[in-house]
Amino acid sequence: MTKIFQTIGLIGKPNHAGANQTLNQLHQFLQNKGYRLLVEERVAKQLPICNSEVASRSEIGQQADLAIVVGGDGNMLGAAREFSGHDVAVIGVNRGNLGFLTDLHPDDFEAPLNAVLDGEFITEHRFLLEAEIIRDGQSLGTHKAMNEVVLHQGKVAHMLEMDVYVDDNFMLGLRADGLIIATPTGSTAYSLSGGGPILSPDLEAIALVPMYPHTLSTRPTVINGKSQVRIKFAPHNRSDCLISCDSYLPINVIAGDEVIVRQHPQRLRLIHPTDYHYFDVLRKKLGWGSQLF
Image (tube, rainbow, N blue to C red; front, side, top):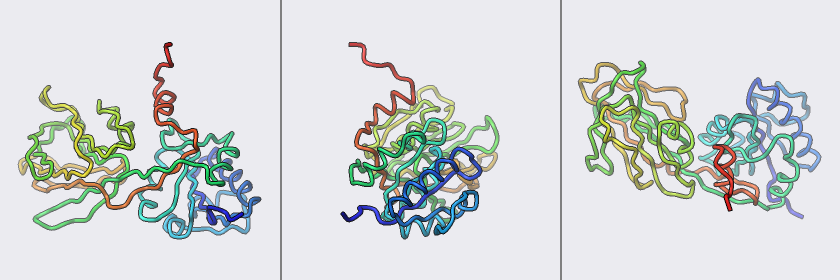
């Protein structure tokens, strides 16, 4: 029988003993099944495996049909930013904390993974955001985020002033410590901690969550996922602002800059075992109550 997946990439959590143990088990399991394996170069040297192809994430994205990410949601986010530009399916083995994006248990992955390899899985296409910085009318580049784009001060408890536009329509003048712009995937991450709504991942929606706003009437707002959000920073802001995409490499923005946030044109192809249900995940991870009757 022809395999659905021919080449499988293994991505890990560097310097993590538990993740390395699971990667070793996965490597042996898949090698015995005759798959071509590409091991991420950051973790390959930490594993006692021989005769394996070592590759960068970019090379895995270009060559693999399936990528298995071993780690937590942070590892999945890093993989998502890379693999969204390639037609590669992604599934995760949880070696982190909450693990909203990593379905497989490290001590019991063989049976569900076997089913996935046989074609029994659910496919989701999760959208990402891109943030573009405009200075003096010129673009300084774009940056991807699967969870959220966060505009915040580099100093604690310093207020930012900004005007927020949605599809070029003025929405509000915001005085706050910052602003979280979250995808449905990111609605259970930083946005949730800031009091934002939980968005079902099949929604085409974006959440705008002010951080410690200076007016009590300023509330989290959900907008159409196809909308473009434009933020203009007041020229008199006392200090510079930072933009973080999935908490990765904060980027400096100065007073007078504009930031445009919109959907990225490419999506992540995330796959799950057939018994996956989003609300089951929420109940387990957030400690929601069980059925009452």
